Length: 186
Image 1 (cartoon, one colour):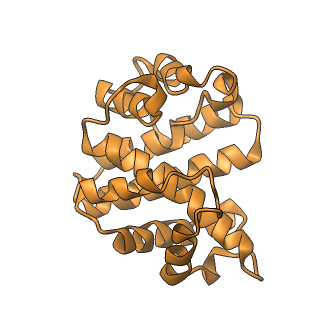
Image 2 (spheres, rainbow, N blue to C red):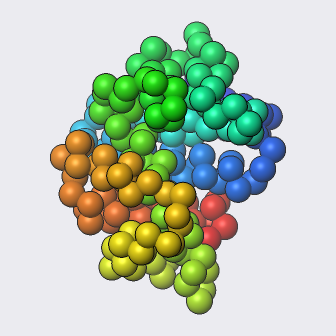
Image 3 (tube, helix red, strand yellow):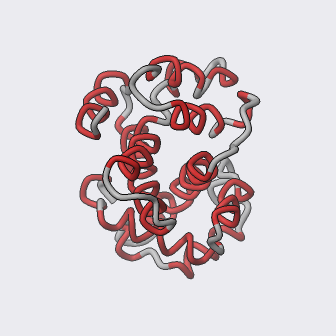
């Protein structure tokens, strides 16, 4: 499956614009992580981006049965993505019982969570733009447990399992989102 095919699938399956943008954001962060971790170019890197783009494909369908979130996506994509990609999608929701046993799975957990910190931080800026977000502002919002309360700080810290310290991960993720800020609308 190509990124373009995945985008069309997202358009077809995901109703809310905010969720689509979140999925694009996670895809961008996953691509940046693949670069940083020196994942092979081309097809292998594209798999990381695809996993980020498609990880929440079933979110709207499973919001009332969250234990199924990720599992339904994996079923939908069976035969379209390799098993390692499907395993990462299953493992990004801890309630499925699947363990994140690969770099890709750990990266998805961290990318999913950090996107949920970065975008709300941008929306708190007077300009409401990612361009005005800094690593310093992310560090401050990370420490404020009342800010973006549903974002797991523990999941963000999964970046350490990838050999990245928190501020380095903030910088990488922020820069990835700033590159697609027009598409994200922030």
